[in-house]
Amino acid sequence: MSNDWKFERRRQRLVQLLRDKGIEDERVLAAVGRVPRHLFVDEALIARAYLDEALPIGLDQTISQPFTVAYQTQFAMSGLAEGARVLEIGTGSGYQAAVLCELGVDLYSVERLEPLYRRTRDLLRSLGYRLRTRCGDGTQGWPAFAPYDAIIVTAGAMSIPDALLQQLRAPEADPDTGASTPGGVLVIPVGGSEGQTMKRIVRTGPNSFETEEMDEFRFVPLIPGQ
Image (tube, rainbow, N blue to C red; front, side, top):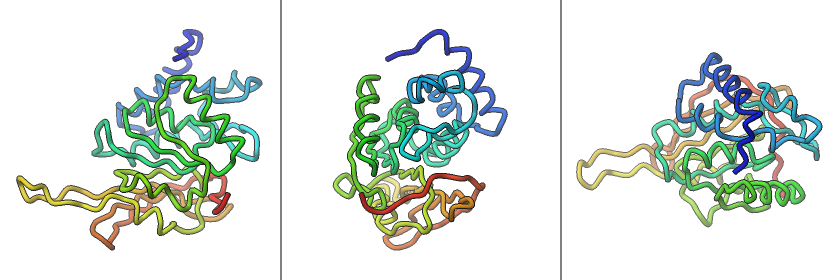
């Protein structure tokens, strides 16, 4: 995998900035520090690759601000270890997927736009990241590989798709101790074009969920259908 030494210092500055802005999970920070973000942006924007800002990637889409990527990852991965099964809705540039792969998760990613899907799939493969990807309607999730320990949605939803809630892993009783293990978690920005509220939703039973509202963000819209 490319890890151009010219960008190493910039990555570490970005990591420190994210730490200063409140990202506390050192696993997430280390993952961000390993991903060559300059390879996920347009060549004309390489000089801005390690600034904490979203950048256009064509097709009216953006590569998310690094803080946003770290923020969602931190709240989705809390309590999860390597090998956790994670679904990403909105592959986009592939940057969020790369960060998740660096954490050692079993990753599945869905992208609605076929040209972006093909471009990003090839880029991730060329960098050695191993994940399953497909082009399709992200609001329907990817039921073939459910249930998931975590689902991350990288586009703003007007409402929470029920299909994603149903694909979260339900809590289970530990056969040895009888204690209940936590259910899967969905991290999703919800709201209109003026901005969205990030929500963290934990499955607590077959048909029950707990929702925590967090900070405000602005994402491209989550659009049903292909």
